[in-house]
Image 1 (spheres, chains in turn purple, orange, yellow):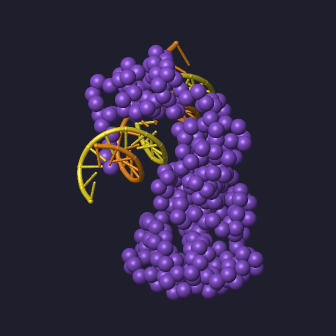
Image 2 (tube, rainbow, N blue to C red):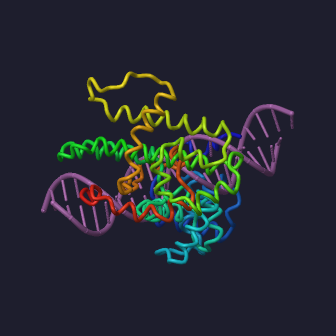
Image 3 (cartoon, rainbow, N blue to C red):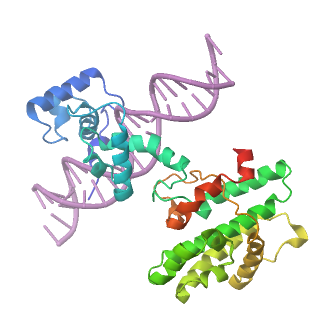
Length: 313
DNA sequence: AACCCTGTCAACCGCGCAACC
DNA sequence: CGGTTGCGCGGTTGACAGGGT
């Protein structure tokens, strides 16, 4: 292991390449091949580090590089390969002749990623985004906006929606735990249960429809506990109504259940449009993204039925 | 016309792996 | 076998262009 010292050398030129430098590099490589990149700059009469020369050649000067806009076929290929390979740009590039990994990476970051986000799809998982922690900042922003605009019941509404979402998260966890769920249980959810009703049920009711291990429930409860704490921060200025800061899971569960219960009868509400709260590849929220067919079938319709959202859109 | 904002993309940086000594 | 070197990869930066105000 160890870092190449070539770029540490002082006096080497950095920054944009001049046409003269390009010519020198092209002529040298056409005549001798690149050989050792480290030795190349001196041999070619360039005041650059080898790394810079390699990058310039592979990303720009190589004769087989295809420049210009990506076709829709290329776009589809990138999307498909990214869903399989992730950010393995060089691997993706091998399937797109004439395109460099750098070019594909840039195209992804500037176009495709945003496209997916606008469509409500997590660019990391390629599944619809319903993750709580990516949308919570929006819920909070909406809460303050709603306060400014006179939505008196908005705070309650948001809390209820967050609880609804928590149930969804728990369902997700249960579904994604193959050791804890047998096939028939999954079938009973996806085929027989109305996912909208499921979302609106308290956790204990919803999870009782599944065959699961105690550890799974504990895990789901822990997440719900975490959510409850966040919800408490949403209702900070509640004065005498403020709950004592108990961290008992049971207490929080009961509290959350009581919040969730009124959500059974009203029409299903929705989350704000899914924006990219954390665009980085290390998106910690991604692990909560809901990948099941349940949301894929009903979520988008619900999304655009929300009057509050249309108001803010 | 000047300024600001946003999008694009070439280039750089830092790290890990593998070959070499 | 451990240290060194070279290369490739993914992430990030910054210059520039274009559009909007």
